[in-house]
Length: 79
Image 1 (tube, helix red, strand yellow):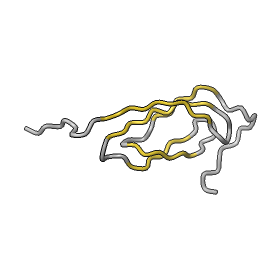
Image 2: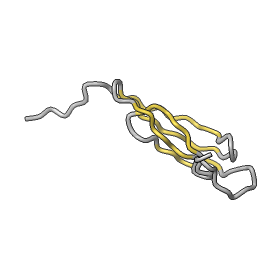
Image 3: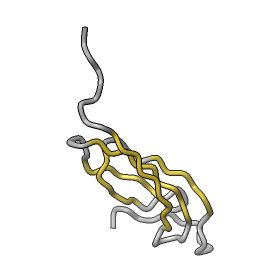
Image 4: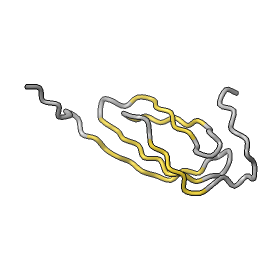
């Protein structure tokens, strides 16, 4: 029988972030596991600006307050 127990412990980190493009506030939940963290993208829930962080899975993003810049455009992540 296989033992699927992780050999390295997990750590969850939550924090609030303010988007430097549109000003919205959102919560980022990031899961880390020793030896399994890779660059992962997450996006502002209002303007879609891409951010990167090291994690073992894609971070979960939850909107706290809407953008404050008065605009409705999306951030151009290709520029």
